[in-house]
Length: 146
Image 1 (cartoon, one colour):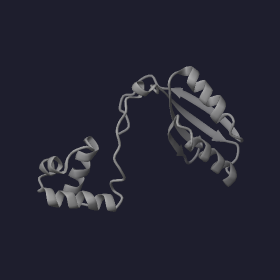
Image 2 (spheres, rainbow, N blue to C red):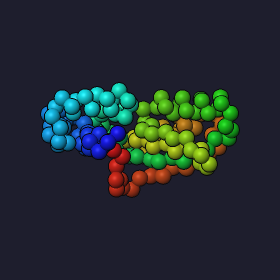
Image 3 (cartoon, rainbow, N blue to C red):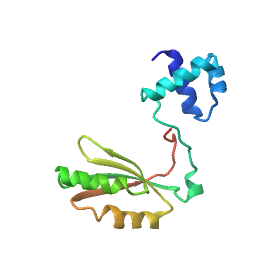
Image 4 (cartoon, rainbow, N blue to C red):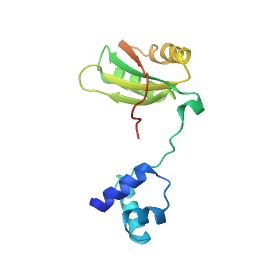
C-alpha cells in the first residue's frame, strides 16, 4: 500500500459516495488507474464495504448507553450464547470482547431511558451467567465513530 492508496482510502472514508471521476481528481489519478486501485483495495479486504451514516434521532435511537459487562464463567457455551444473543439484538451497535475486566463492552442505542430499561430487562438480564452490568449514559458525543 502506497501514499496514493492511503489517499484513496482517506477520501472514501470522508465520502463513500464519491464517483470514480471525482475520486480520481482528488487523488491525482486518471479514472482507469483509480478504479483499478479501488477494486484491488476491495478485493484485498482493505475496503470492507460502504454505508450510510444515519442520524440516530431521525430513527428513534438517540439515547446511547455504553455497558461494561462481566460474565460468571468463560466456558464456550456461556460465551457463545451471550455473544449470539446480543449480536442479534437490533439495539446493539457494537459488541467487543475484552482482555481483562470487564469481559465485554457493549454500545446500545434506543429511544429513551424506558426503552433502555426494557432492553436490559428483556434481552441482557435474561442471558444466563451474567455477573455484573454497569451502564454509562452518554452525555455528549464529542467525536463520533467513523
